Image 1 (tube, rainbow, N blue to C red):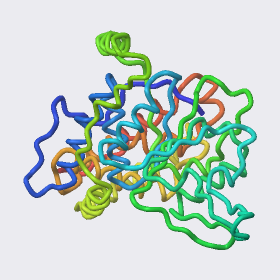
Image 2: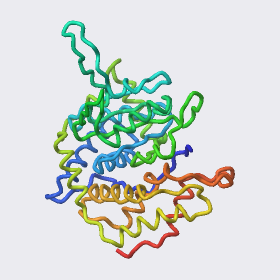
Image 3: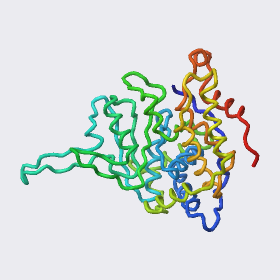
Image 4: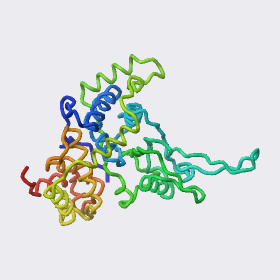
Length: 337
């Protein structure tokens, strides 16, 4: 179920928000955003959403046409907090051990030596995840859920923070293995990348043409935080206050996806949990320590678009998931602030 990228209601400040003095998480996020924007132009809203997912401690499914800077975005984010970066190019012949790691018998020592897989990192880019068969996809998704790897009966925890950003190409379907709905649900958000505006694209082209071969704009990104800072920011985000009325609003939106005739399969309880978690991160990004209904509303599209299936007659009629979700969210009364 691929959607064309449309402007979303995810709030993005025109200028970086000045956080309150005690807001460690907001300060970290704003400094990281400034650095990432030095390498990734024309995708401010996408950067904002991915940072929200990082603060919420979740994983992101990135969908967009080739050449829009998905890899550059992940590299820049990792560099901004000094995190380790790993990448897996998913192909039909990729094995689960290529993801998690394996034990190899060393003839010299006559012992089995552990070879860590690329998942032992802070930020993992799973490129074209739908190119690999289901068994390999499941190996990664298990790591995402449990944040640990089991190799030959030994359980190895991953160093926090751990975040997977998986990409899908929305225009090529030959030779792909679409993720089942239950596995899609493990991603906290589905973020759509669209072409940048003309002015941003001109700047991208001018900068790239002036760079020497092998030079990357990611080199301009400075380290402004540490992995420990991210873990602390995630704990602060989880502690953001949410009143009962706002939680009820999130639940009502999710329940509306189940009762709508336009939706064949609505979002589950995990969708409501994800709404609140991302809403907390949005509040932090805007310098608040409490969630407002607009935060829930703003999180609805990226959190729910991969968790619902449209009814066949609606999909045939040309209506997209985002359009249906916007109508559903607008139909649910928001609590007064």
